[in-house]
Length: 209
Image (cartoon, rainbow, N blue to C red; front, side):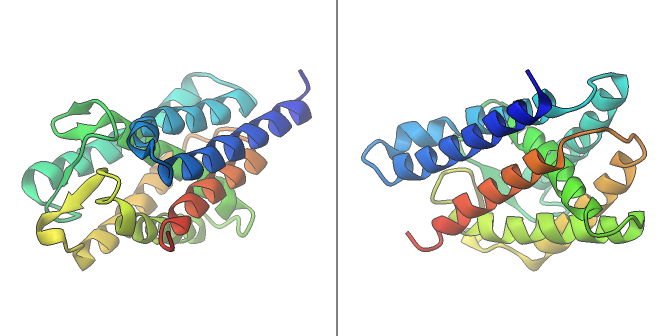
């Protein structure tokens, strides 16, 4: 299969699952569709892997950096109220370790990879790219925070998202990128753009529904 065909299939499936998810959540079967959230996040990772030019030890290390940073920071937040504030995860993100769904760590990796590819289109300066990655991920988090309690993803104490959450997201995602980029991997920028846009549009849609 040619790389071009793989990209076409991937982008088609990304939007098929995304649109199906939106329709499903507004249907009477919303609980069932929300329970499939971990599967959807897993598929995004599979599309990244399928379109990568090479899967090797370097790729594994690069993936584990944001995954591990995500887990540690989320663990500190869930259990001690550090970095992001005091919050707890619901049941729709799947299996948890120490109160942290492992799929949220996959989400950290997916977002760092995709936002890294997007920032690379705008500048070659690693420090500016770190700022862009931080802004992209924090902006997306700001949108997701509105619907997270509704979807039983997570909820902050007293149902108020503290400002420190956004500061934490910007700082941690920027740091995660700076370490991540020291292990360069060859992912597909087109696929990354579609994944980031699909996630963004999904949650933006539910700001108005």
